[in-house]
Image (cartoon, rainbow, N blue to C red):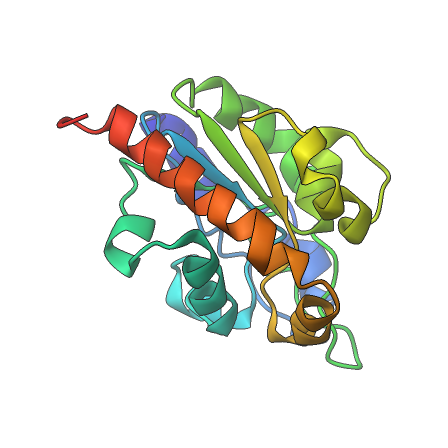
Length: 200
């Protein structure tokens, strides 16, 4: 795993692609993997703030996600317990209108199979947003369809909408998400952590 993490951190496959974006930035893979973590959070890609900090979910979306999960920052960033693997390890950049560009598919094709092969301890996968859900579930359904059908997923997988504050209207329109899904999510997280901790 150490060699793999080093290889991902030095990856510059998308250097030319990023140079052509409106942000014209350099690759900076944000890698938060672990061979022992029982929980995997898979999302879309780092945003501009995460690109600057080098740490995943250091933004308002991260605050909301941690609230959904019922986790403190200390637990969330404990790599022995939580691995975080977005579909692209680097910030994809913005277009001329300031909108997020999609995660380059080459990133997941190059690294995700290798990473998953070395994370044999994963017992719960939390899929945040459409890109992660399409990759891990091999589905073409929308995020709303996938999250509404969360009970149809295996018990080791829970799909979530993206925790962006742009989705506040979605949350208000779908009160079942906080009333029904989140309590189950939080319980599965605690059960997973408790049964894999040294005290468990």
